[in-house]
Length: 196
Ligand code: UDP
Image (cartoon, rainbow, N blue to C red):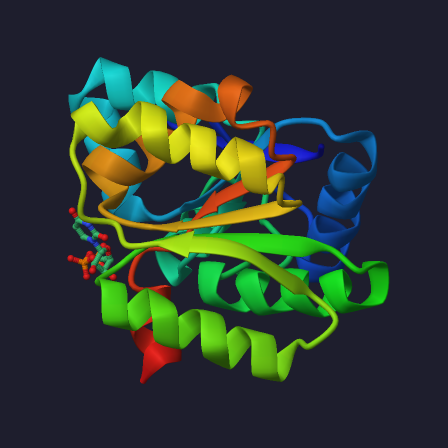
């Protein structure tokens, strides 16, 4: 994909519509694709922690989430066309999922929050099958079971709402080749916003 490097990390120059089309191709090809909605906090973390830099570097797609990244790309003389915010991308993927009859798995936030998100997304996007959900409060000892449950559910989209710097992006990176899901994306606090 066309990208502008910011501290060596390739931020996508696709706009929202192009990003959704790109990810639709990944779903159709069943190609494991980790989407990182990159912001300045993540870039700073990557510069401090080589392991986090590798997670970002090895993501299949980094989209520019936040004015700071849009500004940095302009400053680099290679501007991204627009901000692609994680919250907006989640909804755009659900909308595309309605057209293509996708399914989605929701992983993260507190149990009552993720249950409410499942209800609300199902109501708003009835043609997308909610393949499963689980709260985000579990430790590494539960990873194998969580990964197995997601594999079993075989969704097209996996949204992960946990902690970006520890249990979200690094977790997806660690398991992306075992999950069997084409589009995997960290969405941070989005579940709390959707649950209201
Ligand atoms: N979260 C989680 N497990 C954790 C830590 C956080 O599922 O171990 C969830 C939390 O409930 C919230 C989301 O991750 O829905 C984002 O957390 P927070 O608001 O602390 O992070 P931020 O939005 O500041 O990245």
